[in-house]
Amino acid sequence: QPASQSIQSAKSRLHANLQSVQYVITHPDILKISLLLLLFQISWSSYYQYTGPLLKTVYHYSPERLSFFISMIAFWLVLGAGPVFKWLNQRYNSLTILNLSAIIEIAGIAVSILVYYHYLPEIFFWISAIPVAMGDVLAYICLTTLYSNVVPE
Image (cartoon, rainbow, N blue to C red):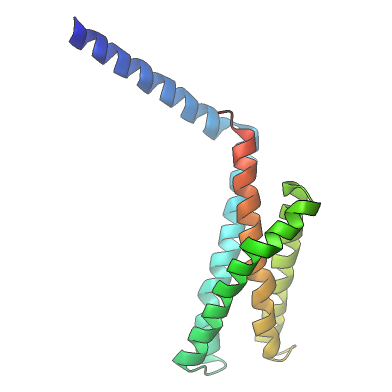
């Protein structure tokens, strides 16, 4: 009898967990947030993956200079996740910060494309890394917050 009750209890827990998962993946707000996360990750990963080869082949960066550029991206990510987010969070809600992060990330990517086509000097490629990195990290923080706010405990 105790083994039968244990199996029944496990089945009941599994059923409850599956219902929770179904609720989460079919919730319209979660689907919207997931789509936004997907779009941000596609834009960020595309930017991050093409910058190294671009700087190496078009601008003939040395490994040291390329490493410095990538480390500066990490610096902008940390700065965005720390003091910039703290400052914005005191003034705006998550949705406003998310919209702002989308705008600045798009602007950064646009500037980097203009540099690639030689409409802007190379220094702007370094400058474009700031809004791209900060926009991505701010969006990630806001999307995580929105996920937390949508799902019940």
